[in-house]
Length: 177
Image 1: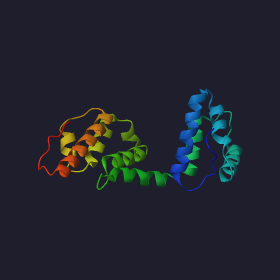
Image 2: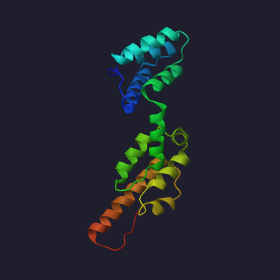
Image 3: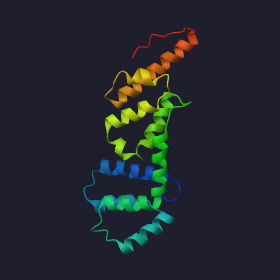
Image 4: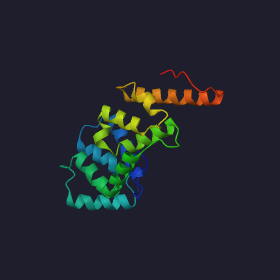
């Protein structure tokens, strides 16, 4: 079962809770919206439990869809303002001083807040490459990759080759991509 959820101001905790609930919903192969909602709300405690009781006074559980439940939940525990802020953070994301692995982890964690890009492989690849360090970006871009996972692997190879080149002191490297 998902862990208990008592609300709070951290949108990542709220989002993570729903991810865990949906993992259980899929594993249990729950078919009806009502069962999905019951499972999701079963572990509400404290503030969330009070909020849910209030929601039930104004909404009929028998006719509520799971999507409408999630919309209410996110409106309460993942404010639109915070979602927009995270979307902007994603838009501004650059590798900078991060390793490719750190950049990819940050990229992936923020990607869900950019739904237009998250569902578009080409847009995701373009945004990822655009944020790469200037020493890596041109090498990856020229390959014209079509799969996100391959872009990440190639960027990791280029980064490793670049690091090896600097460590060995050779002015040029034969990068294998």
